[in-house]
Image 1 (cartoon, helix red, strand yellow):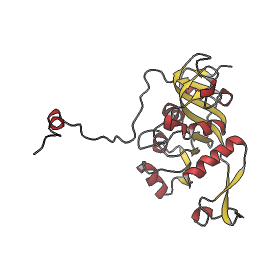
Image 2 (image 1 turned 90 degrees about the horizontal axis):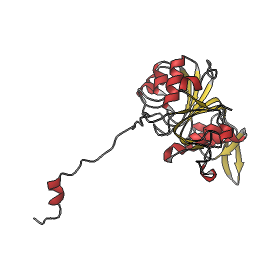
Image 3 (image 1 turned 120 degrees about the vertical axis):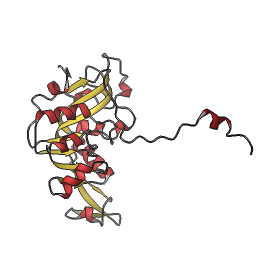
Image 4 (image 1 turned 180 degrees about the vertical axis):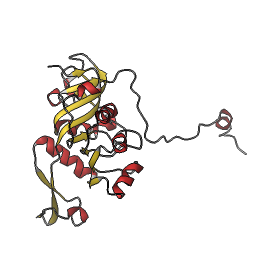
Length: 246
């Protein structure tokens, strides 16, 4: 079965339609499937429900789909880096379902594991519990949360082989692995495409059975930094005189 496609447009051909639900991996811009998101934008599909920890930033990631108003609803945890997101929400142009980050993560994991609902203490007794079933366990109140599933999951992996086995790197493991299991179809963009047998089986984070299509980002892939935080570089003179007594 062919899993590697020439580009994002080809990999998403026949999978996109209006009013569908898409999961998009990433934590900030780390592990964000930006190339696949750009292909979704170019397709022109609209009325999307997007499940993602965050909404990208202005001009990048899911921010591109907000610019073209292709997203109808966001199911998210953190959206503080996107001004356009806030503007559309306050104007009543975008529906939002906020989740505590751990709850959202577990809802996605439950979706992949076939668990339709679970109980958590997070949010009990707050606005988050409004309209949700509440039960008491060991003297504590818990609220019921339901799974999250999608028509399509877009993920970013560090390494992949021809079978679709995926390895993620560092922070990109936060949401990508669980999203890959919780959708009808998973498409991955990968930084390094290697031959069969080159990935140690014990190192695989997402087994290839979950991955239907992939694209190889190749050498030209650029990693964007969401917010550059650095300190001034010391000059040679300042460093040399740092230990002198006055």
